[in-house]
Every structure is written in C-alpha cells, then in structure tokens.
Amino acid sequence: MKNTEITFNVSENILSSVNQNVQEFTQNMRLYFALELFAKHQLTFVQASDLANLSREDFLRELDENEIDFFSYAPSELENELEFLSL
Image (cartoon, rainbow, N blue to C red; front, side, top):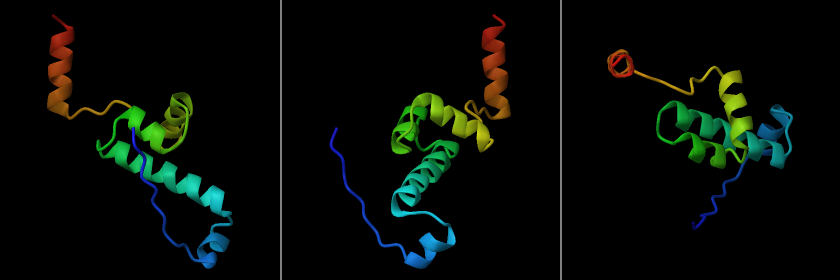
C-alpha cells in the first residue's frame, strides 16, 4: 500500500501550551483523528488503529478510555440483529 506524507506547521506556542514535543504532538494528533474518524464510522477498526499507529489491543483500550463504542447500532439495526440472533 502506498503512503502519502502529510506535513503542516505548528506554532511553538501550541507545543508549549500542551507541554508536548513534536513526536508526542504528532502521535496524539494521529490518535485523536483516528478516534474521531472511527466514531463517525469513516474508518474501520483496523484502519483507525493503523492511523493511530497502535496495536489493535492498545487502540481498543483507547476507545474504552475515550468512551467510544466498538459496536454502534442504530435502534432499528439492533432490533434486526436481535431478531436474526433469536432465529
């Protein structure tokens, strides 16, 4: 799979405000964006954990710590699933 490098500038004031170095800030940006995209169903679990640069287990732990459901069903979808399982 081909990778694309994305770069952007961040003010030193921002790094100082969040008390992070460039590596910490970059890792946190990856994690927060991966969590957000997963929560919005724009990335799969595997894609999001790869974007966050975390193992599947560590990403699952982050989902729990950030109170993001691994499984997310609309009420009607859940009803359909439960009906299917009761057959």
